[in-house]
Image 1 (cartoon, one colour):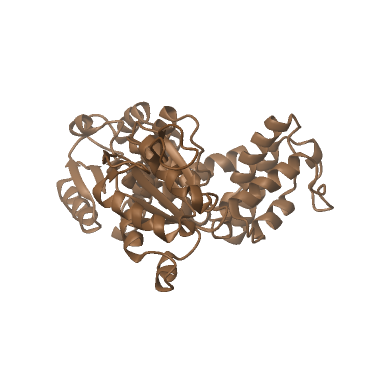
Image 2 (cartoon, one colour):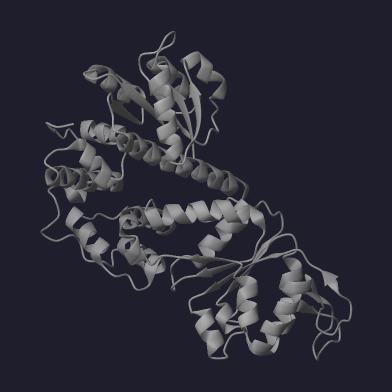
Length: 439
């Protein structure tokens, strides 16, 4: 974690820097905005904390420079007691948050940590978008829940390393989506080759995976390149690896250890350069204890493990996922966007969705095709005439209004509960014309 601190009072600069350092931040302390300018970069991974009143250029001048450089680089401004107007001006200009002097150390650390988390997510999303630009067919990982944001962080960190990965997840939780994202973010130039181990008959498994030479068996009239060899330089996705026959597990383990394979009926070792991303909906260690899966293979493919959350563990993502799926379904089927009410969305968010994201996607398609009952009496007036973005706005407005009512109009508390920067919440209050008497 990193922070650039701009404070002209030497004693306060030292004390604030020590507070941040004790909180785990690497701090670059500056006495003026001019001194901080060489440190500002659009790829800076940290947070900027600046006093408003500085000699020379002010903190607001610095804020304007940062916003021009990168509007998503978080700036926390420190104002004197009573400078409410200046704080409001800073927030309108793009500040992430503001702190009034004198402030408690924990108040500072809480704001800076939250800003650091936000910055990390911004950079991670940019990295994934860059990867998607190189692999336009890669599906997006839709969602903003803590579980999905942590998954994006993990993918960004481990994808370039080349280690083999095991993805654990229930049916429909997005194992292949995660595998394709890992491949896209890895920088590997070879193919992404998906193999469903549960769909391959055991009689053809070896030939499909390792390939065969001409004459290796009856009907093998010419040489065939196997999927592992075809994936050289790329990624092999072994879905439902728990279904792989034990005899094939032994052969796969040897290939992974030596990074060489032999085609069926051949004697020549062929060097390979592929990365394994395996996926399972079962507990492989438990299967190993039952003699149904090789323990040594489990530890070989599970250098890194990723546990995907069920949809019921990321309910906050359901509105975004549903909006994403209905947009695609409407284009695919040539149908208008479906309508729904805020009470309906709340009902869907409370559902268990045993089929996870796949079930939600199928539900979205039925919704587009008109196979789901129309909104009942709980639909707000005029809902049938609203577009999908308008319905999402209606739902968001009601959620913000309820949250504010629950905290007696305290914007800071509401922002924390909603997981939003205060500036973002103020913007939404203005957008939806929601009044509050408290800051």
